[in-house]
Image 1 (spheres, rainbow, N blue to C red):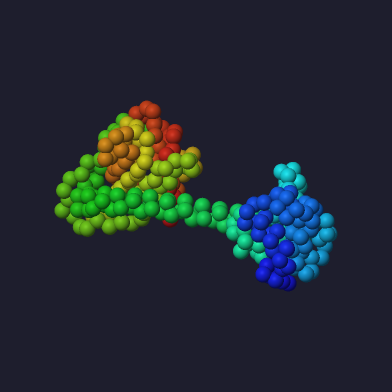
Image 2 (image 1 turned 90 degrees about the horizontal axis):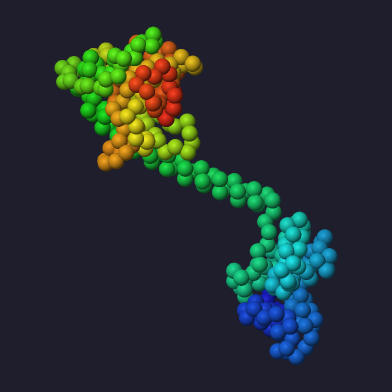
Amino acid sequence: MPRFDDLPADQKAVLQLVLRQGRTYEEIAGLLRISPEAVRDRALNALDALGPDDAAGLPDEREDEIGDYLLSQQTASRRAATREYLEGSPDARAWARAVSNELRELAGDDLPEIPAEQAEVDEAFDALEARKAARVEREKSSRIGGVLLLAGLVLAIVAGVLALTGAFDGGDDNGDKAASTSTAQTQTATGGQTQVDAQINLTPPDQGSKALGVANIVRQDNQRAIAVIGQDLPASPRYVLWLVNGSNAKFLGFFPPVTGKGQAKGRLQGLVAAPDDIGNYKQLVVSRETNDKPSKPTTIVLRGTLGQ
């Protein structure tokens, strides 16, 4: 297969006028004082020479049509029809790509697009989806990392100052919530070192929400508590922590109000005594409530699985 430099001089001249100057067959015909058909013959004979020798399955008239397409010598309707043909013909695409590679030195990136095969489209789409998923995962990991850093600060405060008598009253299952509405208090403890028994990542049930959180079940002197922190939550005076197993929900207590401004904007944090029957529940849930005596979670904003 010859290269461009191997073509006859008249064919090279036509391709240069078409690809480098953007001339039409008619304009070149006027310059050379020959017919537009003669110009087209020279251009298409050049493409035929540059293309692969074994263009099996590609009729001559289709090859000429694709040549006009590559040289941008078609009307809009003919160009659309040729593109549709290329989409459905592997032989046509193969020939067009081979010729395009030979013309690229002259035309650069100005050649018309050759449609991709469906497998290539699927592969490109899969790659795009993979990149998107990786980006989302990186963003999520970054945000979780920020929450974990904040959780570390909470644990630093909890360490050495856990006095569970000042934590949220855990309540019971009989619906008596009135005594459970006070927020966490801390007092200086003289006991042993605080240790983390478990960590629960808290994520929103709504994929459109940016809220994230983390809970740590901590222990000191054989007493346990749940330290929770969250971020990017809507301002509300009533956030509640629950233990949930199916339809069975156990009220643990209210968090301090979440503000909508300042450095603490959207941040939730609190400490609650871990009940002895925590092992009977599967999920830790944070809900936003509209009344001060909720019997079950209404609007769940964060949740995580216990025993991970």
